[in-house]
Image (cartoon, rainbow, N blue to C red; front, side, top):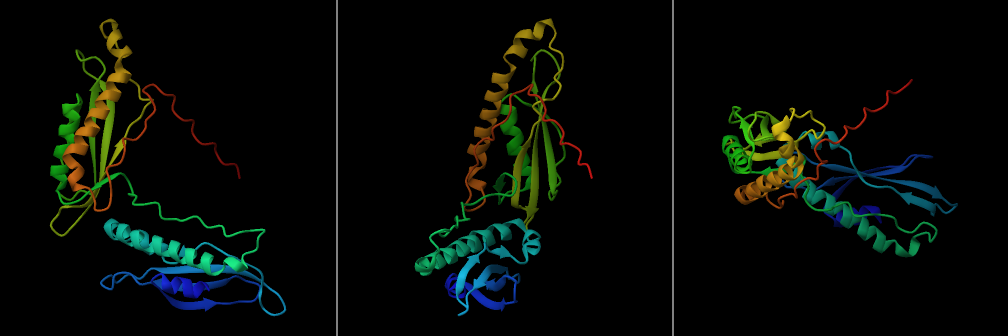
Length: 276
């Protein structure tokens, strides 16, 4: 039943490992793009308690796992995205086929407990863009934040940098220097022409950061800082959406603005030290 279900879901049977008093493990290879040298392998184990006729009494089917998961994580990000979009739904379909074929054999005390794993496209870091250079992406992000009232700290953008941090300051008091520090980090991989493939954008923001003293003239500005800061972030985010949405990685959507704690929030306590 297991073997047939996976073979109908674009897997090829490789082997089955049956050992006494141990789980039976089925191994399959996923029939991915023939041009791809890497072949994902999937393991599906079953704990078998057999009766005298070697029939399940009962048998427990476990969740599938990727045998060469470490190699998958080492693949280029775009390859990982394409592979995930194929293999995870295929595994879901295999389990759906097993549930359908084995419905009459399911122990009523347990039922068939499987939750579909595919929940749509996800990114490794944040909004993922393709088809433009890193300097061009940086320029568009900086323009979005400047137009929303942030001051940018200039930084070089090497054409093929793997990581780039853009630092901005939002004025506490427009009449004085200093403000809320807000950072945007870009994690990048590139195609043969040096364009993002993809470049992923993530915010780095410390809500508990120490702010410069307001002084007597800045009391009102400090009192309105949180709503002004929140509105400026929303404006910058919408500007980025307008300017960059057409460069989104295929099948992905522009992520919603991440929720953030308000300015002045108490930092999380450090994790307790493990005692051994």
